[in-house]
Image (tube, rainbow, N blue to C red):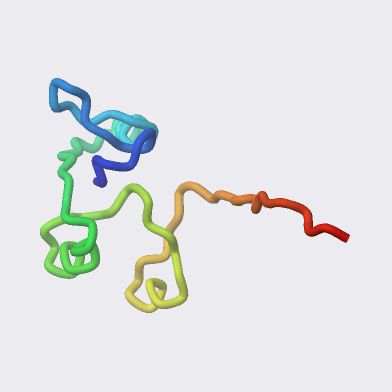
Length: 91
């Protein structure tokens, strides 16, 4: 998990992981009776962590791309549309 991506995932002052992604993950795992062990990782090493099986999955902030699909990483749980906002050009 990325614990620096407020409000999706962050650490409270007491050290607990909180945020939308953490809440959603906990709810999904609870529904399926899975005991989850959350850990933060060096985000630049996420694919290596998966390949080496030091983590089982990446829950947050991972965009599916054609390159990542080639590695078998292709399941998204949140689909977003991001609008562009800017100034209208003078006519």
